Length: 148
Image 1 (tube, rainbow, N blue to C red):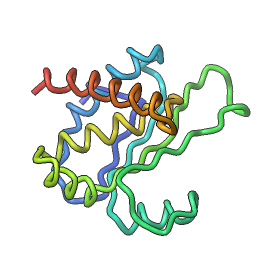
Image 2 (image 1 turned 30 degrees about the horizontal axis):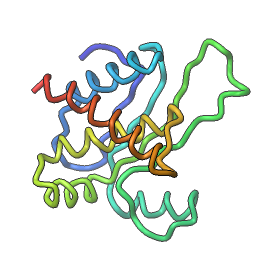
Image 3 (image 1 turned 90 degrees about the vertical axis):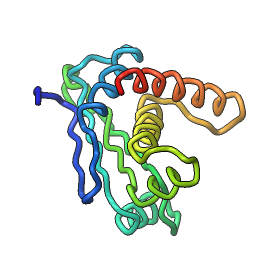
Image 4 (image 1 turned 180 degrees about the horizontal axis):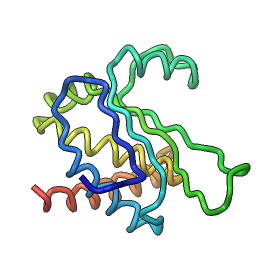
């Protein structure tokens, strides 16, 4: 597999197609005007781990499907482009995949896309923002569909 600054860490025993994820990530970064050298970590984990992170950093005492943590780059050299870390609960993703009648990989890609959009600065606090974020997510997932 080719060298990448986007590290994918699978802490679970779920089969995750990393090459598809890497292509999707590269497409999102390019489309959003970021360089391929942008540093990003994606960690696929379980409900217990994401629950602890959600409680510790966001004061929410429950598991969730995806969390994004921006890296504050004001003290880093300008040539470093670091987005941050995304944690995805594979357990939650599997539940949601069953509820939405989609493959686990598709749900994982939706959550990774959602997490990246948050790191870039998109939010969904009001209906307009929600609509924009959903439209972008669908646009990027359509790209991923072409790669199947």
